[in-house]
Length: 190
Image 1: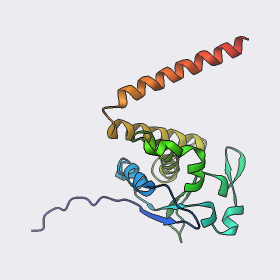
Image 2: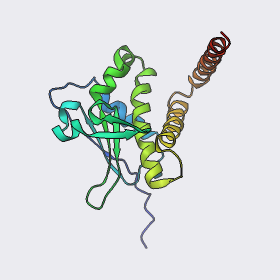
Image 3: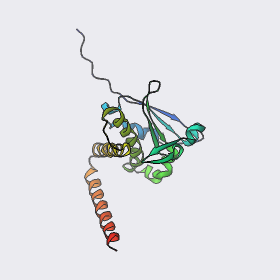
Image 4: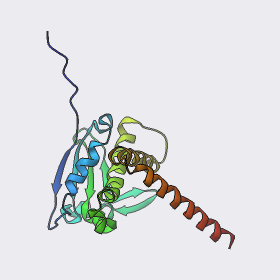
């Protein structure tokens, strides 16, 4: 009698497609690490994550505009994008590494905790689009839903990966919110 096999873990393939660009060291490894903390059920149906740069896009893709919160944004200027599955193509996430680097990795890439912050926010936001489209559809603004899922996945990652540092991070976040709210209340009354 055959024995029950353990369920196979599913993980999208990470493809690097750069043109005249050297990504930061360990960028792909950071994406792999971040993917390890996403529940498997949410990755089902997502087959590929493409790491590329703006020069790696075709001319038509560089000129393509996508809608984001009722604004048109050039695809070549965005940090990432999500393509739903169609009859002929599987669901795919694209991360534009050169734009992510310009948006603020810099010296953060050397800090163990901070190196995942920017990349994780972009990756988890795009996975949030996938979750919204495939696993948990809801009637709400797509970007809001993706941001909510991205935030939840980011918190999950830091809580599990850096469990020993998480209470400190939460304290810093609460302090930042407190300072921000006191700063905005002063400007409202002035």
